[in-house]
Each structure stands twice: as C-alpha cells, then as structure tokens.
Length: 301
Image (tube, rainbow, N blue to C red; front, top):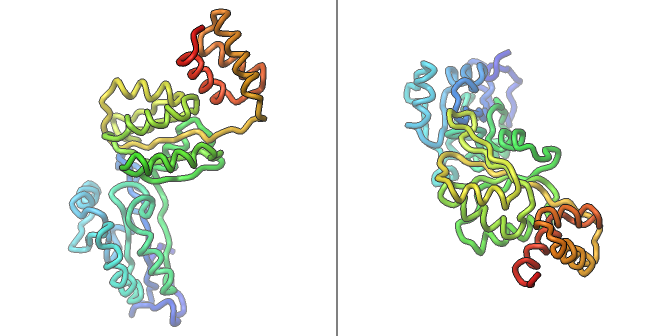
C-alpha cells in the first residue's frame, strides 16, 4: 500500500479525513546535486502531497519543474526563522488527515537544516511521522572519505568566532570517533590551518560538490591538505571528515626527544625521523610529529 493511503482505526491521537486516510508528516530526502538521485517514492509523494514545506520555494520549484510535477500552490516556506511559528499549522494539517511533505534545499531535512522542531511537534501530538530516506551529505562524505565509518559524530557548521571554534578543537583532541562537519568556502582555509596547527598528522577528507559535475575529494593529513587548499580557490558545498584520535601507550617524552635528536643529527628528514621513532618506540605518530616540529623550530641541530 502506498505511503499516505494507509488506513487505521481513528482514535484521539491519529485523526483521519473523510476518505479514511491517516494524516502523515513525511520527511523526504532530495538530491545533493544530481537530479537522478531522487527516488520514485519521493516523486510519488510529491505528486500526492496536500502540502509541501521547503526552505526556499524558488529553489524547490526548479526541482519540481525538472520532473514535471505541478505545485498548484502547495509549496510553503519553512526556514530557521519561521519554523517554530509554522509548527502548529502543520500539526493541524496532519491531524486533519493531510499528507504533508517536508524537504530541505538538498539532502535530508533536519540535518543542519530546518525540520527537527516540526517533527517533535507532530510526534508530541501523537500523529504519524515517517520518512522517505535518500541523499545525505553527512553519510555521502563519510562513506567516500576513506576514514573509519563504524562510529562517527556530526558537528554541523563550525562557529564563526575563533574562540568558539577553539572549544570544538579542544574536544576533538580526545575524540576517538570520526568527526564530520560542514564548512563554507570562505572559512575553509582558516579552519584547516587552525586544525593543522593542533593535529598536523591526523587524516582528513574534504568532500566538495558531491554528485555534481565538479565533485572532488581531497585526502591526506591535515598538514598536507591545509597546505594544498591554501594554494587554491575553493567553491561549492563542502563537507569535512576528520579522523578520530587513536590512543597509544604513553612513552616518556624525554625518550622520544632523545631519539628524535639522534635521528636529526644523523641527517634524517623530519618525516623519516618521525616514522622511525614512532614505529620503534610505539609512540603516537602525531605526538612524535608535533615534538619533532618543536625541536626543529627551537633547537640548533
């Protein structure tokens, strides 16, 4: 049975309209860029919905027009500034038996986009909330990053203020899970350089314009990627995937220091010295690298 035509016995929580159709709120994922990623089920829901709430009606009209779906005044704006005010009206629509669809400009609604307040309000009213899953920038970037996917955390957009970003970085110094966050092209270089100063050897993947013509994934250590991005103009939608920290048994810093000095005095490069000392002593590669940078900067060898 198609979604939106399921029949249930009416009760105080789930009202039905005259046809016996149970009202529902359906979160529908929309393409990140490639229109071919829109599912057949999503298209069916778009055709049958009584009301469709979206971030930008102009943007969404383009999507509907591309698939030949008339909107007939069904599009309603729902964004961060009016979401709280729209909740009551959406609850009443669902209670009246309407099929209400919620979409964002791209990806899955409610993930760093409006939607979570509406879902909470409809669920709290005891009404049906369901989903037509599909594209998600978080999952797409994570799965193509080349980093661990079993455990991860999503941080949304980083704060604009450097002091607030520093608070995030302090937490990430101990975060073992892979971290995913969004960043704007204007702030990407700043964020990467800040992170590279703290975690130079931690691996990172920068996913840009996923599913679009100019899709690109840049992988490497933070030190490498930050230096590369510094030389380029970066545009488009960006998702950053950051490797979690791997804890290794602590090794006395004085022992690591002495081993690095010995390697440098024998003519080893920073990379070769770090690789050798970390492997030989079983120390954290990133900690050894940080200490090596400090030795190179502050000591005459």
